[in-house]
Amino acid sequence: MFGYGYYGFFDPTIILVLIGVVLSMAASAKVNSTYARYSRVRSMTGMTGAEAAKRLLNSQGIYDVEIRRVAGNLTDHYDPRSKTVNLSESVYDSASVAAIGVAAHECGHAMQDNTNYAPLKLRGAIVPVANIGAQLSWPLILIGIIIGGMGSPMVSLGILLFSLAVLFQIVTLPVEFNASSRAVRLLDETGILQGEEVGYTRQVLGAAALTYVAAAAGSILQLLRLIILFGGRRDD
Image (cartoon, rainbow, N blue to C red; front, side, top):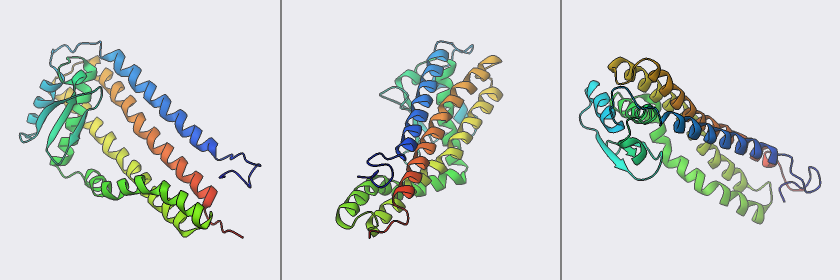
């Protein structure tokens, strides 16, 4: 058992995991409450999320990106492979400042792709190895413990793979912050949002950014826990 050798069978490093869980829950609650609040505020222009997205893209000379409606709530994303801005049902047809902000954020990713924004390209390059790391790290760690104990090279390989998934989370941060920054600036410059509406949208996107920060922090804490538990350990 992981905790044996620390305080009986209690593993004090589990506190790191709990901190990550609390951060994630707090960030999720914050984004949901903030989005719900400003989803009730209709924009003065009356533009929907889809209409705002099209106008923003065209303002930057981007005409080859398709805007699609996708199922779900806050399932919005930009797909660089198909060149599509995918907006959830609650964003696509809504004229709220929250919906327009989310749509603009996804357009920010399309603009990054259009200008070959380096962190976005780096994140895209990391995706395959990050997925492998996320899928295989824990199986390798568990199998390594069973077969060779805590000092097994397989455990070390599992930790290395997990660190690749952590790296992806870290690289994601500047990508998301930059997309939100572009979104807020262009919404103001194009007049899609006006006056205090810009501030409302900044709050929505700021809350959304916290979810990425919490995810990165949780992953880093989990990696730290693995290093504390298994780093440098060798069976007698």
